[in-house]
Image 1 (cartoon, rainbow, N blue to C red):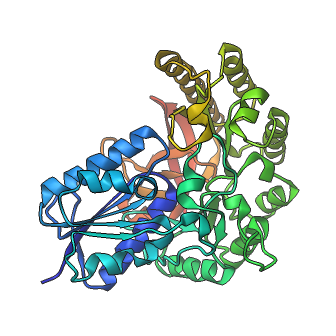
Image 2: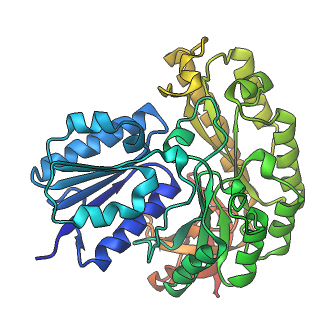
Length: 437
């Protein structure tokens, strides 16, 4: 009888890529996937630890799996597993396997083994890992775009962030392996690759291949001219003329960047150990907007960091209000044990933090709607995803990440078509099909 498995994934695009690799490996071994809510022989929970809420969600998923099948093997991996293995052992009644981030390539083999020991741990010191795990992916089920993880780990050690302790130092996938994975996605019919990692801007600096992120992006665009290439995130200090040259010279590089700001106050940035100033951030944003006026620019903002007074919060709001950014991902500061900021004085109260988050999210929504409205009467290349359930229209994302809906046949899903944006209705950009490509 086939073993059944279920996977739940929390957190970042890197986790999603890694879970897709687990899925591919399970299927190659003859296992059958079932929904996480169903009874399965094996449950894999790929956890996150960026916030306290993510840790709580990880524990909830573990308990949910135990209720679904008390006899199942529970396999827990990801950042929460890396930092809180003892907490997991305390709450699990089932046989459990805990896999550290540096050993994810061993996860499926361990999960399907006939060993019925109550506890197995594949951990190790993540800080000593020198090579990235080899986690090939065959497909992303139910997706029209594929995430291509090229890098893992982070050397920045921002004072609020647990990731360098759970993911280790920056490690890059060799260029040949990047192309092998991209070739698989091309063969599977994907039309867009999202280049992702924990700190993708540091790609190649550890490989000795005379390769960096800018060269890799240029080569990907050249090698796969029919594939849309999108970059998941890049640091303000990594925006330079080489990046802009790729963005402006390669038609298949999508005009969309996500750039973490975190704070618009230099004192708070220094306290965060962010290693750039407001001036550096502003210069980067204005360069992008000048070279590509229709580019989408998203920003991460962290509200309520220790020591952030009302003036610092206002500095952040005013800065973002005056910049050509498109949307904001706003997070309240979450105290993470094991990080320097957890012991900082000047912790901001919950109500005050929530109010700052609210104001920033309102600003972000205004920015988003203004950007969408500016796209009216323009023709976009849209990667069609699926039919929207309530409206009945097809939907997908433009090159510059506008979520467009339009009338069209279901067979367009997974293809790139030209759509003229015509209007905004109830906050949703609507358009009409121009032609299929």
